[in-house]
Length: 287
Image (cartoon, rainbow, N blue to C red):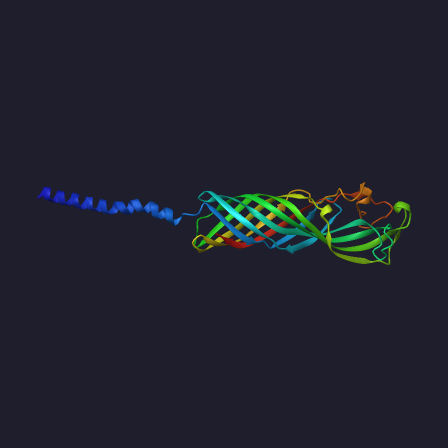
């Protein structure tokens, strides 16, 4: 009786082990399929942005931000389950608003007078067109309810394609002596608007920026996802090119007095120093 009972117990236990073994063997594979993601992803996105200029020379005044647009191509190379190298190409515009004192040669109301010098207050809205190669570390979560959250940190190297400006020039003083020795207040010209001025000579050719961003990927179907994010694009170096204004600083940008007034007899020149910053909002598709 005991032998029969023991034999039946061993048989039952053995049957349970055999039945459970396939389920145990398939468990990890099923889990791996659940979190299997492509090792390389590409996509296209739009880049609306809010941009501004940070003047750092002590005499140029930053006056506000501008809204601009761009587009780009993105590529993520996964090297671990939650980590990737992010790169691509961004074509975008940034800029901002500045105000400073400057010199101007030539009477805008008299085409025949191309030698008279004026001291002016220039309010400028600058737009710079960049093509940028970003390179960043990207940190991604697992998919949570069709959504993957990500953050990134890295650098961007940009090439200046074109720079334009919209100016409002307030003419303050007119030169009446030789080589600008004597100045009188100018009351007849007033405020002069000027739009879409090419200013490539006044802008740097190259740009470096620090990139910090966050966003989400919403899975639409299979490997296709909606990409939404925001990246702080922080310029690192001066993007004003001052070498083309004249042979000395005395014919470049002009310092104002401590009280804000402009003394024509005692003005000195200076170099503009500014960095450009932007928040780029990305919206596109990943494949």
